[in-house]
Length: 334
Image (cartoon, rainbow, N blue to C red):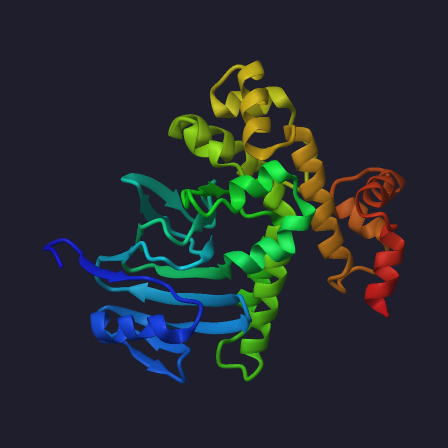
């Protein structure tokens, strides 16, 4: 403990054993090995830890800290990865290898993925709601479900147990945002909330596996300034999926770099051109809208997504998902 912050040192386990550290270190109360409450002088609210299936656990934290706290995760020989989704409106600071990462739902970087053996510190904001979800994923389990779908090169980077250095920060994709926003609408007091949380964790894992081919440790070799600038434009695109593509010139100007440099760096980070990134995220959002139950026709969805020609939307959709949007809508209504 220091004069500025309360430091709490811990490490995760896939089971509830790690919760004892909260009781000893912070005086927390833990009910049924899953519901966590910190002393009232430290934070209001609660956290919920659940084992979803063998190899996957989830921690949902919804707290408002009254005091500055540094949550220091120690490096342990735990065979897991951690995916962190920050849904708080205020910025949370992450420290890894002495480098600060500003993370938040409204920032350009809301998703963190890292090897469980990497030590790190999380410093949540004081006086503001901290709302985040963590997936704890067994490495062997992730390799089993993600490995067959990736190239040998990607698998070598993801599952090289001799390195344990993989970590990166990225945006939260539109599909995951829909899931997280939906979860936020459920009351934790509801008897079915735990089922909603487990379902969300499984769907987030599925989306994470789909994105695994983009996981590149090389992201961390870019300058913090360039990464932040390019990620800012990606975040802008995600917030404007219901509009038309703004154009490369406008995006490059927003990033403060030349058009040629911007195109190279965007593709290096996100593995797609800005236009393809925007189109794919728009179509992914379109699929969520089709199954939401809020639309009666494909035309309504197409227009809401900013397509002037529903037939063009249908063509792009079928090319990406190998099914027509009309069929998706019919199945969801049934």
